[in-house]
Amino acid sequence: MPQMILLTGSGISADSGLDTFRSSGGQSLWALYDPDIVCNYEVWEENFELVHEFYSKRRVELAGVEPNAAHKMAAEWQKRYGAELITQNVDDLFERAGARDVVHVHGRLTGLRCLSCEAQWDWGYRPFNPAEHRCPNCGGLHEVKPDVVFFGESAPLYQRLWERLDSLSHEDLLMVIGTSGNVLPIAGIARHTRAVTILSNLEPEPTIPERYFDHVIHGRAAELAPQLDELVKKILD
Ligand SMILES: [Zn+2]
Picture 1 (cartoon, helix red, strand yellow):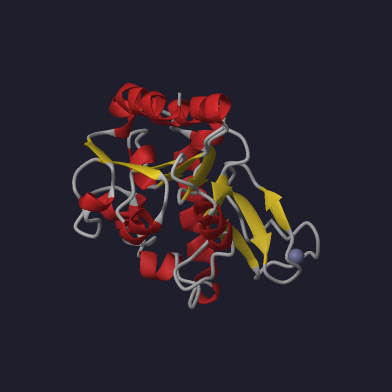
Picture 2 (tube, rainbow, N blue to C red):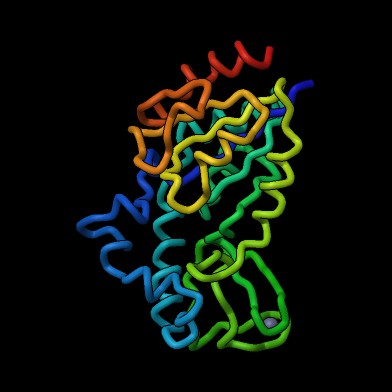
């Protein structure tokens, strides 16, 4: 049976109302906090309280949104074709749409970890309060960090992504949805893979030459779900 990998970015969750780093404006948390301070591995410890305030607000924001048709479609592809979901998103909207074993290469908003003892734990949507909360394993405080990959921090799950992409053959399908190509080298991935490729973004991205993809569909992921499904059926059924 052919394999399917779905690689996604923030565009898919933007359709659920989650602000993205690059589309931020107005009252977006991304406009209220400086990402170079609150998402920066070099300086996060110096800004410990501000970092936790930002991530606590992001968890509350996440609790208030729902998965959309594209998240649900992805969960359906997983059931139907065993699709592997690899996402740059730190939200849990795929899981809430029914998907399992989602690979979060940039970590998870609903998790915390301790850099001192390497414990990782689920934190849900609660705020983290430094006056009150500690690492449940070692009791430490100042090395408790959101389980999200910051700028300048290594992303160990990239290895899994490269291995899975390498395993694809010409019968397989790689679909990329909602990513700007500013973090992962999407164009290079499309150029080198043996799989059939589909790209779905809101609009053309300057960093992604679309000629490297076999199929390109522009628009909002949530609205395109049925159209993408037709294409997937044609390729995999
Ligand atoms: Zn600890």
